[in-house]
Length: 136
Length: 496
Image 1 (cartoon, rainbow over the protein chains, first blue to last red):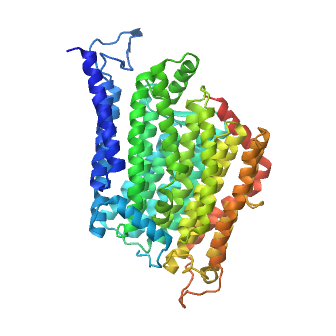
Image 2: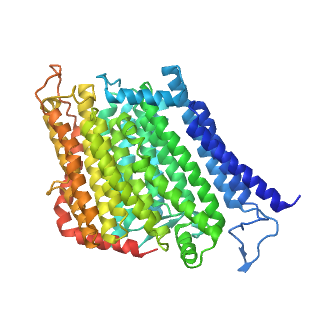
């Protein structure tokens, strides 16, 4: 199969994936589904970045001057997007852990993860805040 | 000596990890306090030294990690804008640090708060110092994750968890898209150092190719959008009142005073450094409109809110509007006004949150009706709160006045009279909320239980006095140095 066609198909499907993830974060009320959506977006972005490092199509490795002459190695992959992705994966992992812990705490307190309803109920509280002691 | 720049984010990171280590060894709170304060003070000394060197020698200080030259390696760079930022961030952190020692006496888990505050400082300094877009993303994530954790610090309180989730979901989504835009832009720029991006942009501005244009535009809009989220410009303001009111008070002071300012820094970098070759009139006009919306929306909500910390949080939204009015003007006077207002707002808002934090902590309530008369019970704290609010309003002897004056002057210079009127009307509109807070706190004591004493710890007082001294120093020197400030910022806008 044509390489360019494969590349474009892959890129298109990844973009569709990002849109699905965005939809999940914005529209799904369940916090766990939101976290899953966020993970989908983040991981798809990572795959897209790795794909961009594929040298056959577009980008070039940034270091190509060897002994003062321009000599790009024939079959290399741009290493910089891979370094980006490594960092982004770690950040995404810490993000998922943080949100999961918060989701667990919210479930323990409310017995529900329907974030849209919880946030609306917070708005109702906002109008008439009760005088409650700060627990410290 | 340039390696000192690289130490600035590293010292808070090391301090933050050391605090957690001491906590697991359970040596005691004293050692945690010592490590925390030493890390904060050391960072401050080094940043003031660096800022002084950069400003006095009028040169750009640069440190590249591992000796890799710029388009390939990661560099830290200090110019006139970032030297102002590192100086005021670290000085305000000393006040917040001293206050946290008093505040931490009443918490069971002080080490976590110290560690989060230190790591947040590292993130903020990283955003300010970095000279590389990908590193900017990493620093934003570090500052962001610690900010969400500070908001969720009271993890048994449901409202703080919800505020944190709201902030974290928006932040996570936007930064993921920022990463996507960085990745796409990398195919056009083939390098992400600021100077490199600027150079490619100068080429792109003259002969634009369609694919490059789309990616460039995407990176610009995502950068501005993330900056708007961090500093809560209008459509992205939704997380701020909840987050800033639910965080512990030292955390609120940092988030409100410094993090919002760093969001402005990101936007200023994108407009004034990276994308200077392009004509950004559409973006700056949109920013101006959103800033005006911010001022009036914040003023209106401030006047009806019943939670004292929420009132101060909406005041942050108002002041962010003023700051963005300056930054969106793309002249040196406008940017100088925006930066000066960021500094003034940071000092005033940190003092306001620290003072109101002491009141809320003593009275055990955040409701403005339950706090009636709290000012009479705690007169010294109330005096500092009054001073900070006068600073936020911008009453003439205080430095808050000079930034608004400069902002007004910048608009009049450019012949834009409607925004100039908006500045005055917006200030008047915000008075209602501020005076409502002050007036309720100075009522006859209605709900105050007898026997409540004003806590006046030496740490707390030294934090207030440090911020007040900073305010008075600025009030003394600003009338003579306003012109120098504009010149300083002007040199920044001229360099790439």
